[in-house]
Length: 128
Length: 146
Image (cartoon, rainbow over all chains, first blue to last red; front, side):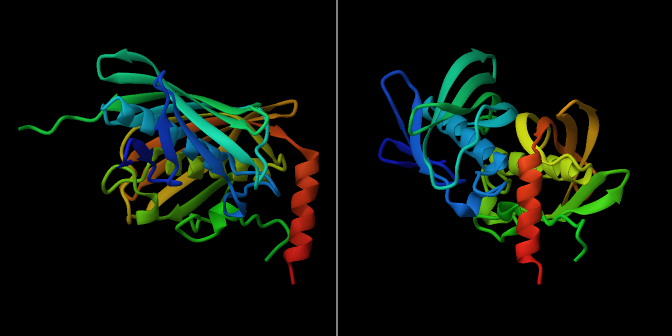
């Protein structure tokens, strides 16, 4: 995750996430045919990667770098190659070094295509 | 290339940076596996692959296991448990198999390990069979074969 102004740019797709007033990180994306799984449909793994990127942007937004411990993904409807989508992530809870997050991918009609819950663990602070 | 050999999705087969350069082998009893490396295009934490890259390979492995079982379909749910970092530029192994079936649902399992056999991540997924997808893949193969 890198920082460009107040945006978070993911290492995977290079999605540019911006935070809204509620701390929801949002990025626009169009998956082209490089990310195709079944014919004409975006690969489930590419969608998982975008959700992971949204959650990573979220923990960085909260200035708490963390790594993925678990992802639970539900695929509601297919995402078509070439269709524009919005990827969103937000924090839902904290428990010690655990961070609970949700992420979603919605299409141009704002229909929910994929949703995920994530558990991230804070990275160790280097000894100073 | 035999009619029954599955070379994987476009994304997985195609090379980095957007692809993974992964292709699967049948290992018997319906299980599948692949040996591959994550390169710098997949970097998340320094020296390790990001969680999404790991999820993508596991999803592909489980989809391939479905194909091997004659149950091509779409992922409905997937859970990935991350146990250790996936080092870049090192040989890794991903294996998957079908655990059980229930009507059109296929329950699958996959694991990613490093060359020492250490578990990096494991996953389960439920796929739903799609006859339409099965037909579409057969059509793709017949137009691609020379």
